[in-house]
Length: 441
Image (cartoon, rainbow, N blue to C red; front, side, top):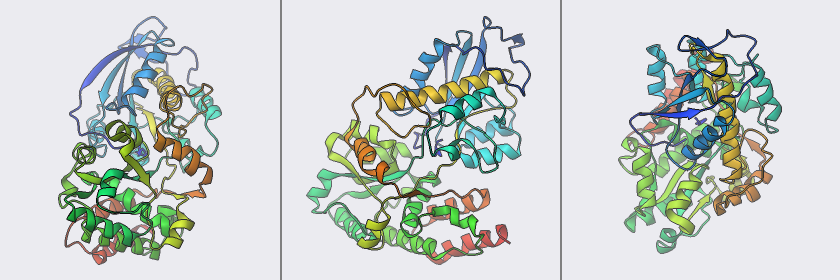
């Protein structure tokens, strides 16, 4: 979850969809009892039902999942998957499942939630499973942090590499408003917001009802000042926000006061924000690189992306290859309470690998977790080609994540507040400093 990580999802009501699957034989765990099927043994012939809570709503989520399902049918004919479509609610529904003892066998989530579930014993430790050793052998170079957590454990099988956020913009609207691109500085972005508002457009659509996206926007500004990103909130155990974080808060507030964000942004969900952008009512949109597919489908060659701005052009040029995308653990996890735990672990690993395979071969995304030995067959969108040709070869470093849940929650809450009129940078820094002081004594 993503973002994953985690991803922008529509606030859908959850529904269940039953899909027949097959399950891979072999690769039994060495730390779990043999699983069964509603009281029966998994002998390769009896049906075993596996409930999966996963994203399933657009080309970047539903199609890779469906492909993995079709591939799994060839391997595990005795497994029946019950799909519970994930809701973009900060994993609140999943946390409710955990609190009520109703966890799915497999679920998709992010590192923050995994830390909570590790404490409450709602996530299976995958360290000793043979499926994990197999997955590690296929992991792409440099993505160890996506699989192995800072505490040394494996909690989930990732399907993407290190993802990051981009500023998407409508080239046609920018041309009409007389705005030159790329925008390199915060002042230029503030000026563009004023011009776009005067021309009758919402300058930037943002689904700020979901706190992670305001944190992502803020993190992009932080990374222009500090390549290590949020990791510096823990590494040196600061008792107060470092200067880079204060500067980024001042910049984000300046952009809010310039009218960059809609006044109702903190009550806007992904569906509403993306609709504004796709319909031409909003000139810009903030989301991860996965948004490339949906924006290309809706806007064609009208859409492109920009790097996050900096305080001045010199800083922009020197820091644009510092990428705001921490390689935190996340992906498909398994519940310890699953009645079919061994099968669930094998299925989770298989789904993640085939999910990656589809994203690489069909969607043309190079940002996948495991090595894929099949060629790309789909047409690569121009915006993704830019990432493959321009961004990835020139990455200087990726920002690191903050692992402390209390600090992360405080940042989430207060970056969202920065989009509210009347909330000040002093309030922001005071609120974060209060948590830093408690956590880093």
